[in-house]
Length: 105
Image (cartoon, rainbow, N blue to C red):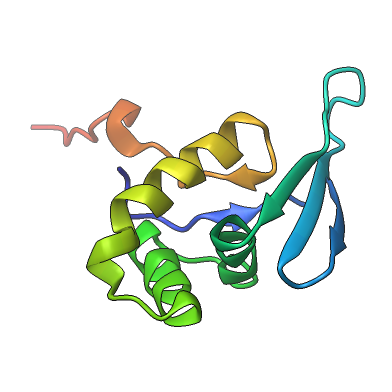
């Protein structure tokens, strides 16, 4: 997973009640569906109040739920991908397609 910063999408409607968060992607109203985040899922959303790497987000979630970060890193990483798929968070830019720079002889 890229080490860049994950962040909440700007075009998302949110109702936050602490342990329960409802998010609705607004980028494409025809396909956007509300998503209810409860418990640890809501903790992931709260951890994204500030952009962070997957590890930083996992560390924030771990602190919030009282477990070691290593125990939640894989689950948080997978959930970030799921949130990105429904367009409520933005994944880090993918640098794998970057064109290498060349220098002239």
